[in-house]
Every structure is written in structure tokens, then in C-alpha cells.
Image (cartoon, rainbow, N blue to C red):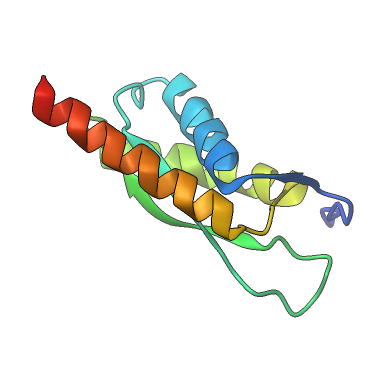
Length: 109
């Protein structure tokens, strides 16, 4: 039995995909304390392939082995249905300014 790849994947922003993956991971039994999933764009040789991969997982206080097992189940589903939108310079500036704002808030509190 072969799995069909979806050539017309839904295109979402990198941040949205990371949020969706993290949300699904946290819904898994003991991974509720996972801090996040980091996605990186990759070049593809074939247009039928996904243009992203998981580059890091921030486990937080969640058990690593159980979260890895859950990601092994979740990520292939996401790879078949999502592509990451190209980042524009405006997106990079927004991400940088949000990061600076979060650092300021952490310093103030």
C-alpha cells in the first residue's frame, strides 16, 4: 500500500505551521508541557515534495521519548498536506520586532 502525496498542499506561513504542530503535539497525552516545534524551509527537487522539515523540538518539561513518538505520527500527516509560504523581508522584520517586544516585556516583568 503506497501513500498518496498531495501535490496541491495548503500553503501556510512558517509561524502558523509551527503553531499547528505544537498544538497537535500538546494534545498528545504527556506532551502538554512541550514548548514548541521549529520548522525550516528546504529546497525540493520535485514539486510533489513538501518544502519544509522539522529542524528542532523544544521539549520544555515534556518527556522527550514520548513527544518524539508522537511527532513521528503527526509530522508525516502534516508533510502530506502543508507547504510553507515563501518568507518576504516584511515577514522577517515582523518576526524580529515581535522577538524584541517579547524581550522587552520579559525585562519589564
